[in-house]
Length: 109
Length: 115
Image 1: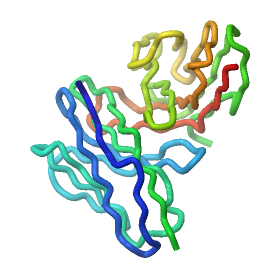
Image 2 (image 1 turned 60 degrees about the vertical axis):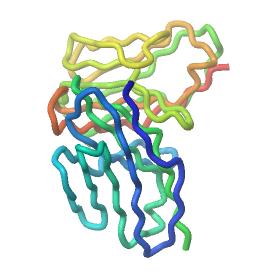
Image 3 (image 1 turned 180 degrees about the vertical axis):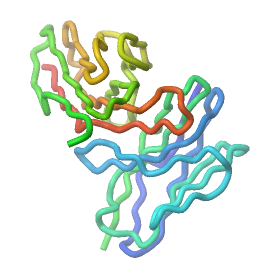
């Protein structure tokens, strides 16, 4: 079956760095997305990776290893507004998005 | 303002009643999607439409129906609501289904409670 695994909850300190991991098993693979979702709001797009390696976008970076079925989202210089859930989703061979349950990130001052 | 709108924002519904959730986008996106989001389960695809005039079933289609008469609108109907359909419903759209870089954009959601 198809499956996405990511930690349920993580806690980090304001100003620090946090890495949110995601492993995926899908029939075929056409890329991996990360979305941010604040409580009570809609998911918003953060990043897309289809090739191995690290993609950097300001304070946020996303990494992909296709051979390991693994991705991570790296958040630097954490701010209180980064408190949110982070959703990992893989695009399978039929171009359907398979979603993880999300990682709730709690930022403490 | 470009984007996706959903209505209503929230609704409390008696079991057995019929309900239509509305979704409209003005980005001229070809593909549209309906998801439900339940605590601890993540987003689950209910139905999708790759282009106006076509629809398809997602992971959890039972009890729901959709139509896509035009590019902009993609209503979701619960024919006879049951308590297990209590959830937050998100509509999303993307420029082109099946594209490798096809990013989905989400509406604000409808919080539905079935009693």
